[in-house]
Every structure is written in structure tokens, then in C-alpha cells.
Length: 183
Image: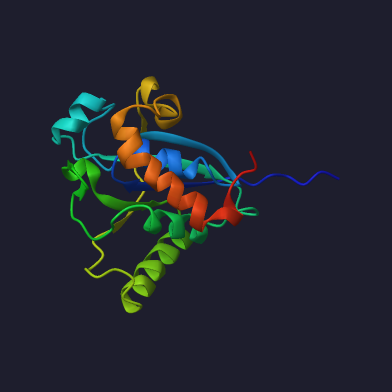
């Protein structure tokens, strides 16, 4: 008898979605990563509108994953390890509400795990400043334009990719070796 695959969804905003997509695509158990927009007021926002900061949306990724291979908690571990959750509405030189740190939960279990994770990181003083990551119920997720799909892997030689994304990928490959897909 074949085991039926159970796929869950996680949605994270941790700055530029080119960075977060590239990081999570490396992981075993991750079926897909889609870049898009969530948490705002405009219906079917465009990248240009998002970049102006007027829509209220965050650049985010929606991850489809197999929880029997990688848990939501393990995804959170990588989320917090690969962006700065202590800067409000910014990641490095990317500034604006669209670059905020936010976890969009899809059920009560994800909400509880997210809040417990933030509480633990705070109690353990993992970061030298307070965590500003918000936890909110997932709303409508709008998929980004096609040219954003797999952006890093198609544009590795671009300077932004080389200077911002490649170090994050290197960090994942160094510290999360046991969670990486086989090449």
C-alpha cells in the first residue's frame, strides 16, 4: 500500500523574496516555493505597486512542504537564521513595509509554534535586539510575476544575487547540511 503524501503550506515574509525563495528551495521535503505578495489591501498587486510601498503587502514566499520530511518548526529555524528579525520594515539595504519580517500562519498549530519560537529566541537572547517579526493569519496570497520565479538560480551572476543571496545560500549549506536536498 502506498503512503499518501500529506503536503502543508507555510508562508513567510523575510525581506526580498528572491533571497527567501533561494534558501528554502535547498531543503529536503520542500515541494515548491512560490514568490508573491500577502498582507495588504490591493487586489492582484504588481511588483511595481509593491515596491512603492502603498499596498500594505509584504514580499513573501509560500512553501509547500512534506511535514514527514521537514517540520514547520524546522522551516522556522531556517527562516530566523537567514534574515534579520530585529529590523522593522527592512532587510539590509531593502527598506519599506514590503520587506517586513512576518509569519502568516495557516492554522492554529502554526500560530502556536511561531509564537513559541519567538518566545524561545527572545528568552535565550539569540538576537542582541528585540524580535519584531509579526505573526498573523494568512490572507490572500498573490503569486508574483513569472520573471521572479527561481530568480536566484537564473541570475546568479547579477550583483545583488552575488552579494546578498549567495552568502545566505552558503550559510544554509554550512549550517543545515543535514536538511539539504541531494544534488
